[in-house]
Length: 69
Image (cartoon, rainbow, N blue to C red; front, side):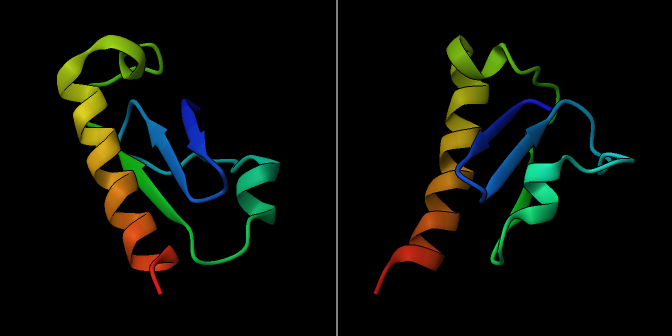
């Protein structure tokens, strides 16, 4: 896996769902969303601006949609 933000988002290097989802993903309540950052590895999400920006944009959209009153 790569990166979770709470139970909401999962960021993976490839574009396929994991063949065996993690226990955390399975137990997470809805809403949840799989976010794929094309070409990124877990470590890229720390310091590669293009990948960090893409991940933050996805998380911001998800949290805005689901946490805003």
